[in-house]
Structures are given as C-alpha cells and as structure tokens.
Image (cartoon, rainbow, N blue to C red; front, top):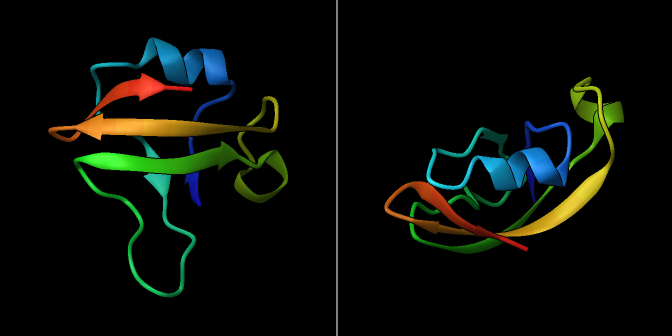
Length: 69
C-alpha cells in the first residue's frame, strides 16, 4: 500500500488528471505503476500530514490519476 500525501479522499479525487504525490512503503520493490490499479492511504500518524486517515483504490493512466474509489 502506498502512502498518499493528501489530507482527504475528497482532495485526492480533486486531483484527477494530475500526477500522484506518494511514498512507497513496500520493502519488496516499488508498488507504484504509471498505468494500473493499486491501493493507497493517508496515515497522519506516519506522514505528519494533517487530515483524516483514509484508504482508496487509485487507477493511473499515463502517470496521471484517472479514477479514485
């Protein structure tokens, strides 16, 4: 799961069409792919980014966010 740098899922959805701001968490290799589907979340206790803790499924196309569920 990626850590996404957004304060809420709403803010993440507002960034559809833009690049994703994230941090990798896997010790087994990168999870991010410029084309594909993966899960991400905001963990305020880990990132220090104020806001709500949330999780989302993120679809990327061409390095840009295309869908957030």
